[in-house]
Length: 398
Length: 152
Image (cartoon, rainbow over all chains, first blue to last red; front, side, top):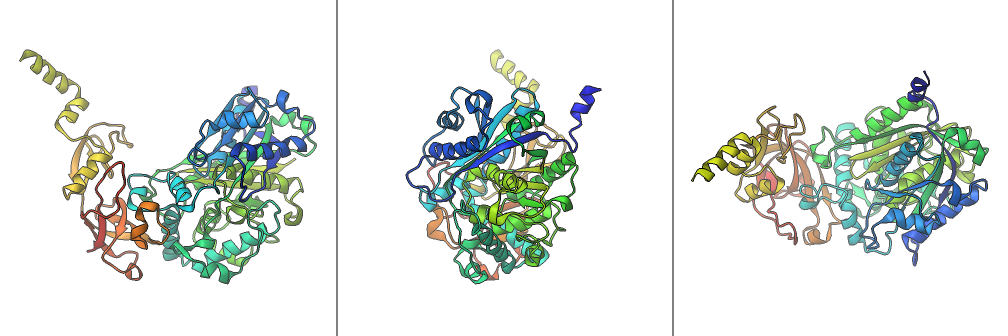
């Protein structure tokens, strides 16, 4: 009887977030990834005075995409060392841009298994000291080598292929894409940790230089340095650490073909739809119950597709959803209140848990100027590469 | 002599190895070697009939390792495309260039550059055909030939 209840996770907290930390996002000159991660860890420790990090934290899971940036592998141990957590088991997860979304999923396995009562999960990337062609090359490693990279298809190129298909099939326009950028830059202007804190106009976005038609400079996320982390525990232990935990009530992760060209269609991401479906089912939540969401806007088209894959609107209506203002702060379902990857920045490995950090702030009423009113349920959507990995998590305030 | 016969017999018993000894391996490298010979080839699973492009050594449908080479249609239609302006280092001399995903007449899909047509004249649905001419960009490893697409 007990076993049966345990296996039924529907609508129940899987784990609880008792603290969270985020470094400044931006061009952090003169800092190594490990130093940036320590900044995020320090914030998480300071937020949670009841936590004794050295005694309580039993494992670290950390997402990071590339060794090439700093000529440094072995990230798990490195981050544990520099966060002052020496000797705990430390594991790096890699799933391109979904590295820390997957770290979060992995950390949930650790807590739910009963093996660890308290774990730290986070992500980090140091990118800006490299030249743009170098970063382009490293990021491209997340796509298929023998058929995509080999034929000159860049990362923006893959999402441009989706954009062209979406425009052709549904009448989405370059203006719709630009509206995502304008919205997220507005949100970023309200976030003191965002890489870009300046608003832009539709004209700025539309007249920026073409990267991979129809995507222009302002359709692309930023090359950013940053780190993020969360402290997770079992729901029954959460109140020992904080009066205001945030519970993760749904978790979904899925994979797809590494070559985008092999997929059935190019106007949605199957992995994201599957991960979303699993997370919604586990959380016993419907898309219309989501109050605030952080979605993976690595390119503006990706946010439009995310609306559709997550059921915020019907397939093909994503462009019109952003146009309606529903996903802007003050709208029906504010999306990417942090500024998203577009304006807050996209330190690849840090992104998944940085999204969770924003939802943690929103659900605990700490999002300051960008606080959404009366929020109860939040969602994060983290995509790796052109969609070969997706991780979706659903959160509820205590 | 006997030893050789025994070896051959062994190959008959171990189906996979026999196939390997007679046929080129069903690998990506082999696919590109055939491109160099002007052939677009896929691997057809002998058990379930699924045709793989690129060929795979393990059928993802039925887990069989038995394949035969099949020639694929060289014509198809354009499903989607983009024009790359900011290119990776080794392609910078070619930018801007168009790339797309082409659906061959048998339904399989393959990406590649689109040449011989001005970018503004490229349209989704347009008929394209494969061109086995090599392309200018070079890269140290691995050295594979290239194909591209042109208007049919």
